[in-house]
Length: 389
Image (cartoon, rainbow, N blue to C red):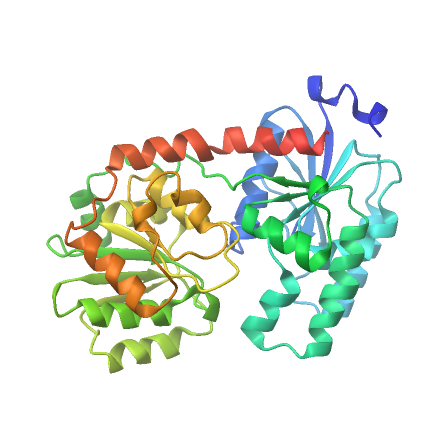
């Protein structure tokens, strides 16, 4: 295996990636990660092919080759069969390295992957257990996902990349992957797109937000694990002492109506804005318009991309002590990590920061920390080193 790619680090390398959807159409954290990583690898002169579901047939000026394997709207068994047959049809050359990102879409093609080519799996989270929490999967369904699909996929892989030590622990304990196969590399942020290039006043003007209220911002999928219900309860606690506080929530999801009802019942209709989906180009504007970002996650937060996006825009972030999020903030601003995931702890930290009883880092310090540690150029090179190891 070492001989197969011994010169790859010094020359163009052929990298085959098996992903999920296409980020501009399906704006999830995993899709964004793959989108950024593959393009950064291609910028390094590597030949990158991305296979996935629902990928565009043609995308002008893209430095990577896209191969669509199935339609995301097709029934699951039909989709998996399509992935297998289309993957088989489109193979023309043997890659130097293979990079898998999603067990379900990797599973149908495991036996078709060329022998002798090293396979790295980017573990973005315990898929089976996450789905159990969000959609109350039956026990049998979780067992099939975890023991059959995930475990079989991981057994085919030579090494693994995780976004945090927290997810490394899950991979090691729940899936019995030895630590000597696990590499911890955090996620990255596009420091050109996410940068402090507007004054807060101008950012608020662009979004039509109030100029004279303290504003909290969170960009989240509206699902159980992200803790927005706890955040609304915390807002109700601090409102009597910070009566003009405002919370802007960007994102869509199945809990939207429930959360809107909760906000109404808590008397927060003048204090919460549900923004729905925010286009990618407006996200940096929203971060810059806020005094503070907030990540109140309750479980399964392997990294916390929104934290580094906010920091890159110069806006400090409060987060709960969940998953990989504390690993981002602990070396930089540990006082902004709440003492627990409970409502009272979230309320206490938010109130202390907004009332300046806890000093938040400056915009310049936030930006510098993000650029130094999470610049995609650096992260992609770290990933590449593991792929070629």
